[in-house]
Structures are given as structure tokens and as C-alpha cells.
Amino acid sequence: MHGPSYMYREIEEIPHVVKRLLDDEEGAIKTAANLLDDASPSQIVTFARGSSDHAATYLKYAFELTQGVPVASIGPSLNSLYGAALRLDSAVCIAISQSGQSPDIVQSVAAANRSCAGTISLTNNPKSPIAHASNTVVPLLAGPEQSVPATKTFVASLVAGLSMLAHWKKDTELHAALARLPEALGQSIETDWPNFRSGLGDASSLYVLGRGLSFGIALETALKLKETCQLHAEAYSAAEVMHGPISVLKPGFPVLALMSPDAAEAGFRDVCDQLSGMGARVFSTDRHGEPDTALEFTATGHPLTDPISMVVSFYRCVEKLARDQGKDPDQPRHLTKVTETL
Image (cartoon, rainbow, N blue to C red; front, side, top):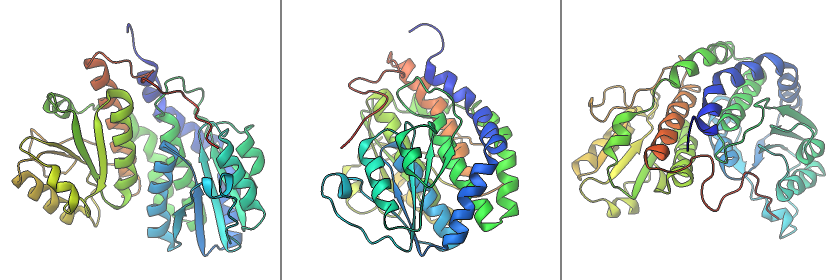
């Protein structure tokens, strides 16, 4: 392909998308936060698929860590295929969908409205069926996303959820971190992890590790490696990889470790050291990593927003990796932009 890919251009837009969302949709975000505050839910459930479900996993940890409210991802097929009636009277439901069109997500929200304490949708299309089915909607304002792999809408979903959390929790430190985030992400897009790209060699498979807040980012990272580069990437928690998955390891097996500077850092580092001792080639965002395998990321000043910086640098990396391999990152084989699941 000639010239920059759509994926590249959309990654470049991410800092502007985040600033526009925080500036222009504060009212909608506050309305959603007020719904949460008024409902005082004993649980939150999410409806999403693909990258949107990875965003929900990230937000699960953020909400549970800061508010102590359990968050569960509900399979949309429970309603759309099996007709199961869930008891959600003490729950608030959050649906995340870039297009807002998937019938199973829309049906799940409509069903939840009949029993839960309120429904919130995060979508890039505020006129979509999912928006109409929800009690309140937070438009992501990411603009058209032409590349099949979602990038700016994924980041916007994370930021919308975190801003909602900051208003609900009345968390001034998180508000300040979000205000700084566009500038930090502007620095993140300048980093594309060349040592990881060159260190993969001819590998056809790798592991991506996360822990806590970075686990949802690891899931998203593995998906993008599959989509854009046709690499068999599997995501695991650093707490789980030392069980069955380590039997796959052989000398030189690549591992991408998305390590956040938080309470999980020390244990995560120990796991990476053990994997290296078994012969794996571990590339890590560890601040104390070896220069040839350390991956730079821009610190944001808050543990909840640091993983967002990591995923933006990864997006630049994987777009370049795909093009280096002669692949079109905008049009992965067999894929379409919107998948409508029943």
C-alpha cells in the first residue's frame, strides 16, 4: 500500500479524540455518573464483544478497585439465543459498542431495562439502536473509523468509562490525570517499540501478559496482533501463565509483558524473570528492564491511566509491524468492520 494507512491516521487522532470527548461530552458523562450514584448498585454488568469487551475488562478492574462494586461481563447470547431472564434489579448495566448496531447487544440492553436499575451505553454512534435502547448514552466522538481494527474508539471507551468513574467517585486525582492524558498520549504515539518488532523474528506465536488493570489491554493487544499480522497471540494474566501455558515455551519464544507500575509490579517482574530463565524472550514495559527488551511507555501520573498510554504505543508498533510484513493493517483478511451477532 502507498501512503499512511487509515489505522496510522486514526492512531494519530487519539490524543485529539480524548480531549474532544472530555471537553464536549462532560454533560453526558455526568448524567451517566449520576445514574450510578442514584442507583448505588450492588453490581455492574457489561454487554460487549471483541475490543469493546476488552475495554469492559479494563473498566471492571478500575471500578472494582476504586468503588468496591463487582463487575461482570454478561454473554449477550444469554438473552438473544437462550432467552434467559437475569435478575438485575440491583445492577446498573453498561453496554459498549463502537457501532451500536449488533442485535444481540441491543436485545440485551432492552431486556436489562426491564429489570435493572439503569442502562448506560458507550458508543461512537449516538443515533444507533443501542443508544436508543439505553437510559443514557455517552457518545465517544471518535469520528469515522475506517480501518477494520478499532483503535481510537477503543481508547475513547476507556476514557469515557474512567471519566464516568471519576465523576461518580468525585475523584480529583483521576480528573487531573484525565486532563493530562491527551498530552501524555501525544508522546505515546511517538514510540513504536522497534526492539519488539525486530526481536519477533520469524515467530508465528507469542504470549501477551497483563495483570489487573493491564489484563484488558493484554487481551486487546493479542487481538490486534492476530487481526493485523496474523500472529497467533494468546493473552494471559501473569498470575495464570505459570500453570498450563508454560508447557508451550521453548528457547526464544516471545512474550510481551504489559507491566504497570502498581501493586502487581513486583510479582509480575518475578514471573517475567522465571519465563526468561526458561528461555523465553520477554519484552516488557518494566521500568527496570534490560535495554534490549525494555519497551518505552509514557507515564501518565496515575495507575488507572498508565495502561492507556501502553496500548497507544502498542498500536503504533503493530501498525508498523503489519506494514513491515507486507500486510494491509486496514483490511485484515476475512474481517469486516461491523459484525452483527444474533
